[in-house]
Image (tube, rainbow, N blue to C red; front, side):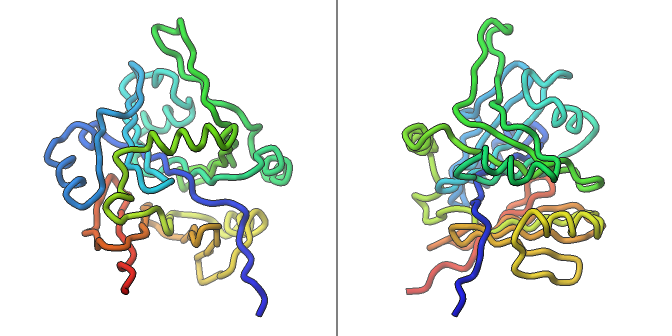
Length: 258
């Protein structure tokens, strides 16, 4: 039997624009923690212009971003503009690649950006903190307000160090990572054809593409008038009640039976 082909990427993290409520409301924070998703928003990075908070899910994570000032304090300028224009929900989906230069060369005809590091200004621009990884981005979709990006950490030593800092982690509660992401939005047929040239697609249903990834993960793109994202987690023990953050719905796969 022919081995199923998958794309040479895995899910790294999702960037979600949120109101400050999701980082400050104690009742909401306790609700998240009660489901086995350790969430300490005060531990997230930030500047005077933005605040990040993370849900660590095994080696993957969701990064929630609240923009506090007009310029976003060093956050990605196009994303800051969309935040101030009212965008909430998933804005960036990052796929991990083993060779970002090879990826950008392969996808150059599809408008991918050059790979760059995020640089965050600190202490009134006196110090600039440069990321230990590089990102490249495909263009925004015309009506679905998010981008697919690719990321490569500089080396295995840094990646291992980053993983040790991803605490508290849901893995301790038996929730081991992200299984699938399904994005619903007003895509055009041309955009689906564009995605089919970029990715291997194992299934093409009516108005839907299913894109297989490494680690048993998948990304589905669905044409819909409603914009929302469903994130399903790998779970060994826990069945999550649907957790809604803006228009992102987080659920779990059924626990593995013995």
